[in-house]
Length: 505
Ligand SMILES: *Cc1c(COP(=O)(O)O)cnc(C)c1O
Image (tube, rainbow, N blue to C red):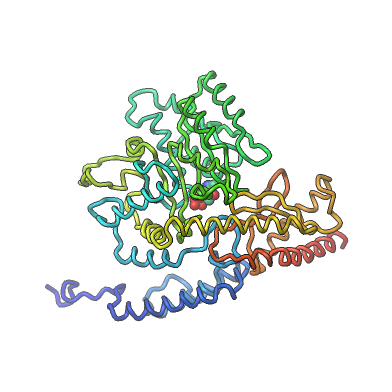
């Protein structure tokens, strides 16, 4: 053996001694605790433009040829991220549907990475696999979905929806079907409202369904799928020789939080022998709330679905990433994703999650969800989700009683509205007023986004560009909601003046 052989006292440059790890880790945890303590006093975002953010990395130059001390790197990375991030954990972050992350989830991710189980196979992750199975069961119980279902954690809502819809397609067109599968798949159709999230287009394209397979069904004034139109399309398509595979209902649309008539859709699917999938990425967890809280009773209809997608990184406040797919019939779920190549020798009596989804090696996403479910329980979640809904309602009421604003929608924890300067009040529907208000509110949203005072996103409803506050944030307080009209009106007035000046110059 050569004296410099690795076997003779190897020291890998990537390793840390336990003492170094302890020191760096404690320092990092202290910094994170400091961030949490000061979050409210910081701007929601630094609002720097792209070139300035990119320039922050210039000092690190080209790919380093030599290494740097770990403690220095951790300090520098923490500095960079703390100083220049958008904080979705900030009480005034109300944009898109991204949650404030639960602190216990931050620690869970550290623990998960430290043990690093590969939750693709039970053998490689005995306790972790059982924790994931229990997490899936708990999520089903929380939703009132049959606990005997199958399911797994995935990266987010898109992936969870893919798993559900792919299971539907494979149930109708089994992989081992001998002849004519391609011809039959060419006649497949899938039904979803025009408000459905774009995952559906990605999914159908990736799954090889023909262009036009997606039947986009209209929505009513509340942005809910029109049942009669769905029924008519199903009947017509079947008569014309198409093969309806699945109907997708949404439990909380991404724009306005609308809940489709899920129980009636489930009944229709049963009558037509079509798979019913529910996209509950945003609103699914609100099924745990009482109707008295002001959420649609139709949410419970997800309990009747053949598959459901929910997103723990939204309304369970898990740090990114964590989605969850549930499939009512475990055999159909497994049939969609299970392969048995000669190089795997995994037992069959336990769950090998590789058999239930597209991933092979899998991280331990379930831990942060399991820990949070244990920390607050059903009661804690009901309280927090109920508070989010109540705050969105309070915002709707407050803006509705203020001349400077026009409210458009409130559903679940989403409220949409627009700023209306005096000269456009009472002129809704007039073409030039609508155009001016769209331009103004679009510019206003951009201004708010970089202001650091408040972060809202947008929705377009009936051609109107609206500001959209979505509260999936256990840190938002009544005072934060009360502050919104002044913040928006102040920036709105400024943007309006600028647009006028530009138009007349
Ligand atoms: C957020 C969302 C998705 C996508 O989920 P990701 O976690 O972003 O992948 C799909 N559908 C709805 C209704 C959503 O709100």
